[in-house]
Amino acid sequence: MKNSCVVIGGGRWGRIIAAKFCMLGFRVSIATNFPIKSLDISRQEIFHLDPIPRLIYIASKSIDHDKDFELVAELGSQVWLEKNFNGMSVTLRDRFLSGNNFLFNQQLFNTSIDRHIDIINKVSDFYITTSVDRKINNFTDLFDWICHDLSLITRIMWLRGVTDSLNIANTVEFSQGIFTIHYEINGVRFMLSLKESGLRCRTVELARIATLFCGRDGVLRRRSGSGVENYFNEESVKNEDLLLGALKVALQSRTDDARSLTRICMELQHTIFPLISKLNYES
Figure (cartoon, rainbow, N blue to C red):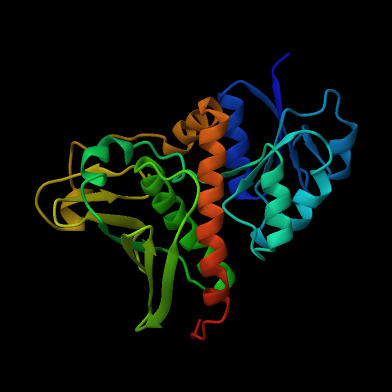
């Protein structure tokens, strides 16, 4: 019998996730209010599946994550949550962490950053600039986008050996269309800038030692020279399926490692969410 998985959320992203799990040998059903395929089911039909799914992946809209987790929490399946709980309730977070449940974001399990661990362990200043090719309409959208970068920051801290207690200070500001977050985490400084753009890309500067770039594929690559445009024109850039690779890494990770990544990321989210939710900006 193949491993069974239910993806909650039948939108574009949920179906992409489902397709990747199929590629990894899972029998996948999609729980959605808008069924279009034979294996699509309703959320209530999850409870009638036999056997109980090994894994439930919540890929619905972030505003629905809390109620979708509450729906399946007692089923006994492992739950993977896409990016965040948007409301960041402490009670809900603690309940999630008390089970064998993980956050999933492809940046959280992006091993392309691992290739640079020698530099990561040497520097204490990281500058992350992220451009998104969609309109950021409200703080919910903003939090969703920032959670990609928080996942990357989490992996950097985890690579540096942080697995538990965090000492966090942060500030958030919005000026001239750019959201800027300053983080200091256990003495390591991060500056994250996020802006709307015609491109979807990310630059990660490791102090002044190295600069990493990624495009839509999310895979971080080091390049000598300067300019994002030069990176996109590089003939040497290979097409890597980061999402598929990250799912493989997550499935193969030790439970303690996945739980540590989840705890760190949720703590970063928990400290920043109240600041983002109070921001006033023109959408």
